[in-house]
Each structure stands twice: as C-alpha cells, then as structure tokens.
Length: 330
Image 1 (tube, rainbow, N blue to C red):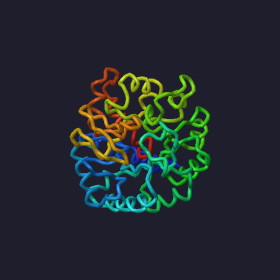
Image 2: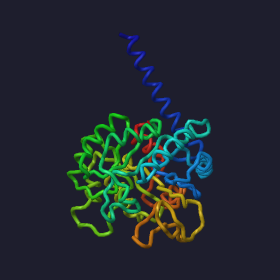
Image 3: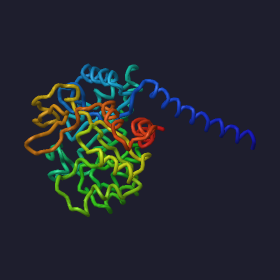
Image 4: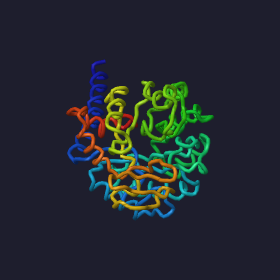
C-alpha cells in the first residue's frame, strides 16, 4: 500500500514539474502563447500560394517577435485549400526548430453562421453545417495537429459534432455566431470549451438584452479568448469581460493577419480588399468589418500593460498559463 502511494506521488510530482518547467521556459524566453495566428509579414496560412518555405519564414519572424508558441489558424476556405495547406503546415511543424513553437492548428470555420455581421470577413460561400466526416478528413490532412475548431453554436448538428470532436481530442470553441444563451449552455454541456474572440464576430446592431455577447458572458462553463490589440475591443470592455469571466478563464490572442508587420496601405488579404490604417486597424471598407489584427501577441501584451485594471501576475495568466490550460496542455 505504501509503495503504491509513493508511486502515485512520484507520478503527480513528475506531471507537476513538467507543467511548471514548460511555463518557466516560456517565461525565460520572454515569449507568449497565441491560440490564433492567421499569418504574418505577407504570409497567409489560408492562401493557395502557401509553401513550406514561406510558412517556416513566418514562424521564424513570429519567434523574433516574442511568440513562444502559437496555433496557425486557417479561416473558412474552399476544400482544396485545406487539402493543400494542412499537410504543408503539419510537415513543417514536425521539424526541430518548430516542434515546440507550433502547439496545434486552429480551424476557424467553415462551420460558422453565414449571416451578415456574424460571418465577419469569412466568405459564406464556403461555409458548411457541422460535418464530423469532414472534420475527420481535415484532421487526416493535418496529421492529427488540429486542436481547436471554432463553430457557431446554433447550427443544426452542432451538439453531436461537439461531442465527437471532443472525443477526438479537439477543443470546440464557439464564435462567428448568432447563438442565444440556451445554445451556448447546450454546447457547453456537450464539451465546448470557450468563446472565440469574445466581443467580435457579431453584428454591429444587436438586441440590447438578448444577444450573443451577454449570453457568452453569462455562461460560466465557457472560457473566452479576447483580441487585445487596442482596436478590436476598447479597454473598458476587456475589463468587463475579465470581471464577468474571471482572470483565470481568459486567454489573450492576437488574431494577427498576414498584414501583421507591414506598413499602412491598401491590401488584399484573407479574401478581402482592406485598408491597414496608421493606428494598426485592418478594415474592409465595403462591409465595415475588421479583417484580423496587425498586432502580434507581444504587442497585445504591451497594450494590456497600459491598462490600469491589469495587476501584477495577470499577464502570465492571460498570455501563458490560461491558453495552455484551456486547450488541455497544462
């Protein structure tokens, strides 16, 4: 009996030490964890022009910007884009310089709401209803690297999709949706983990009481990611989200786009003709919606450090410990 207890204690200590060694080494590297990166320095992870070399170059540049680990993110795309790009990313992720850098893939779409506002910069023409067979195909192309899939909670079949994805070891996040409180509670019971970029990916005009923002804040079982680039959310809304969810249930993301690191100007990115403004905001002037961010996770941290409601120790939680814990990597 005593030897069994000692063995269990040894196993516990080993897991505990591994967890804190991982966090400690990330802190020593002065880097942060980013669960949503669409591209960087003119490299688009959802582009038909992506190559192993361009993806690897974007990874190196992100490392230079204090990104210690991140999830390459593919947005809603044609099927052939997933078939082509997922193996490219998965292959690069196996090579020694990038094994620890890439902690999984985030698929944002195609299982999103096509309604104006909820769709944001995603192309409704490529959206699908939740389809577990297609998810299995995506995971096969990605060589098992997919760790997050963002879906709209109100879509038909989202319950079974969430249960199956969870059994596959994939974290279901909820976003780009018109879901109500009951939808979000139901998906949380099915295993959904978090809200993707809470406060964004929703229409400009919403019901003052019954809307996805209030509903998401009220569902305690769901953590949340927030884009803290100084443009997507005003500081006071980030403060309100932290107060509602609790500091332990928020992960900061950059949602950085392929235009991150580029000078202001007119560009075409992620299927949108956009303007990158002097203040760093990227907007599609035709539809009036943001198209990703131009800030890295390190720059998002710098913005948060200017906020008077961020206390000592909060950054470590928001940008290192919480992202790992939410996806089950703690």
